[in-house]
Image 1: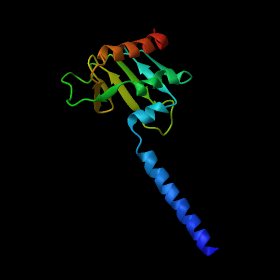
Image 2 (image 1 turned 90 degrees about the vertical axis):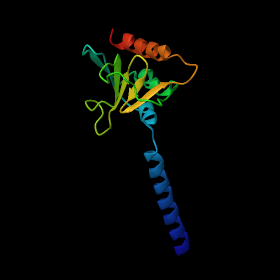
Image 3 (image 1 turned 60 degrees about the vertical axis):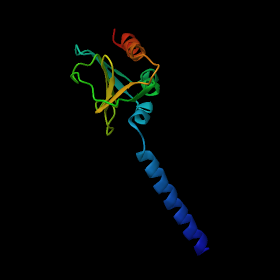
Image 4 (image 1 turned 180 degrees about the vertical axis):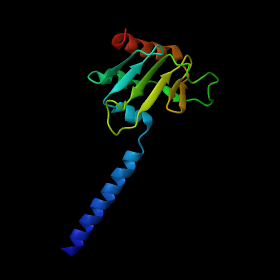
Length: 137
C-alpha cells in the first residue's frame, strides 16, 4: 500500500512539473490566441477596447508571419495601427502584448515580423485595416 501511495505521489509531482513547463513554453502568439481583451489604437490617438468580439481580433495570431532576419530601418513610432492585447486597464495581472503594424512589417513587443514568401504584406495591412474600420471608423 505504501508503495502504491508513493508511486501516486511521484506521478502527481511529475504531472505537475510537466504541466508547468509546458505553460512556460507559450509564445506571444499563443498568448494572443487566448487574450480576453484588446485595445485598438490609431496614431491620431483614437482607440477602442474590444472584448465581446475578441475572436475577430485574436485571429491576428493565425496570420502567416515569420521573424524578420533584419531589424527595420524606420522609426518604431511610425506605426499605422496598434493593437494592445491584454491591456492592463481590462486584464488584471496579465502581460500586455503590443502589436504595431508598419508599412512593411509587424512589431510584436521587441520582435519584428514579415510575411512569409509568396504572401504580400499588403494583405496584412488589409486585414488590420478591416478590423479598425469595423470597430473605430
